[in-house]
Amino acid sequence: MTWQRKTIWYAFSLFVVLGLSATPALAQGKSKANKSKDSGHSAVSVEMALSATKDVLVAQGFEVLRIEVQDGKQIVHYRAGNQGRGKGHGPPLRMVIQRTDDRIVVLDAPDEIKLEIGVKLGIKL
Image (cartoon, rainbow, N blue to C red; front, side):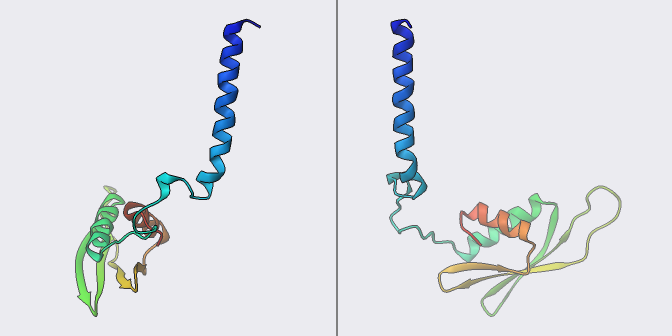
């Protein structure tokens, strides 16, 4: 083996060893990059949740009809938009967004939409 191959091999081995030693700390969330000032809790307002909900619904082909406020709950009325197949619009549907204690909760929504809203907000719904 030439000295160039040995040097590359040693550099690669060192890289692998350092990479494997850093993996457990990252997996446990103990790295400095994962620490935040507010100890992991992100403050999401109802307005941010509404904005994300509207963006997600429109991106998935839905049409937002109206938003109502009842007893501190935001009720989003929406329906499936015309997908260009000449079958018209879908039936009106609704979802409820409310703040409970320190969390935003989305009720009466399909799981795909809840997941996408959570990803957009950076929280788990």
